[in-house]
Image (cartoon, rainbow, N blue to C red):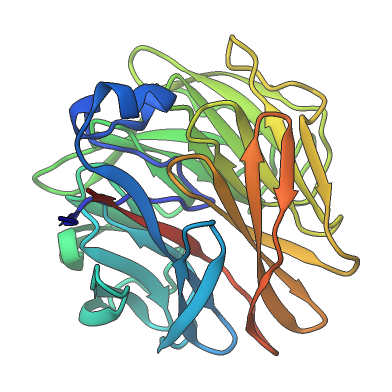
Length: 367
């Protein structure tokens, strides 16, 4: 008999995929040994959701057994941009014109059902969901909205300099790219839902508003940040101190126009899309968490292609990348292995005016 346990992972270009502990519920930190240590349900990627900013839709695609995508349907949302899924696999959060919109996910066919919205956030930015699914954080440019599950009980923190955020595993705070080009650490008060800055704010390798995402390794001992058209660097690696503040940050010599960043669930490499140079780079991680100066993977896509968002399935087997060419948008599928990346035929979503600003993979446990 096949059944679904409603448990999902978030694979945004802005944060690393997280799982509840421990292996008994399929913790990805167990890597390839999960199937040996846990004989229960198997984690299966089911759907990919991608935002269509210009046409005003959220596109739903089914992941077939070989990792290829099959388009299912569109859900209208004006100005659709950032997307996030709560770890329980219940809700998709989407920022759109005028606010943040919450949809329940139908596990059988991926259908999205609108259930709530929060319109007190001005111009919403990149959404982050904590590993327990209890809180969401939405930078707005004039403040930061912190909400409970389903975007309820929202408050506005006066902290207005956040661009991209990622929750700590214990959900007690966040790391953030700041609009100064620095990195910051914030504690979250679970009662007041207010953020408080603490620790140093080291230079992250970018300038002003160029931050495009930050991700962690599975142990959250290192944080990696990507930037567009930044100086002095476009990619950096930082250590996380014992008090959860950000320590030493080292800039990578790689100089690219990074639009999105994602962490390989097996901690083998950091994956980044190069918006203007038509590249996807897989940058290897050394044993000390630093980044190798020479990419393990460098795949050039077709000419005149603008590589945008990256999403990786939680098994670390398939990567999906949105790209725009000549006014049309496709999602390229890649099969990942250490040191190589094989491209599949792209799925064409629309024929014109698609600018994807968010993409996530929804996965569930199945027997």
